[in-house]
Image: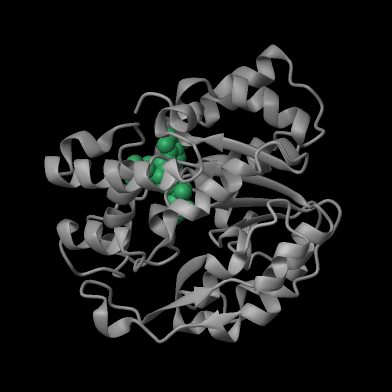
Length: 321
Ligand code: PPS
């Protein structure tokens, strides 16, 4: 892994020091994409450097499922769904405890101290079946995931909604002090945490037909969650749900229900500004009244130019947004 010079001085709005990381070049030998990971970038907090070797060497288990996303793409929604499927729809347990304590965020300790011990160790000690959340891009995931073809659920979301949701989140939890205009610009320059956003989801979109990868979009989950659940049940080798179970699950996963639940809404889990709301709008298209016309156009062009390199377009991935 190559690490470029720290970028903290050029990050106008961010209040945690960041740096950009280049991927592992040798990964091209064993990744499904045969991608040259040396061309892939990821902006991470400097603390990541004390964790990256252990994340790289993280020992996986056959029953592991990794929920991999760029931030604000519907991770929590998918984690709750996958956790419930893997735990025989144990709604009682889900109502009693925060999802973040049931499905650990692997690199959380690279961002903030939550546990006293680090989040990689906590992942290591979880009991089966482990449902592990990560925002790391393909090139920085534990290498055993690829070597042993562990199950990955990948959720993608359109760029404009991700930018808006990320801005509110980062501002709310105190990781961003600048304006939304500055945020959009920094996002497109790959200077916000976990960027580059585009290569993050395009890599997984291109791997979507691999047997161990379940690719879905937030937009698809909004359009037809039932069909996504049916597909996921098969992917996770769970017992098919009867109609009553499906209805219960759909009700539990509704935005309104998760927002009103003490533990399904993670808002109180964060030390954040008083007006912070994790479950914010939960819609497709919040960019329409939150981004300027200039930024909508800039993000569209930026996205499409990148997708062109792979012969893709936004509509085929996300549908109408
Ligand atoms: S994080 O912090 O990266 O893990 O955030 P993440 O969970 O990926 O994304 C948060 C956004 O997902 C929305 N959300 C939902 N939408 C619809 N239905 C349900 N049940 C649901 N749960 C979470 C949440 O509101 C955030 O999106 P925005 O657009 O900000 O509302």
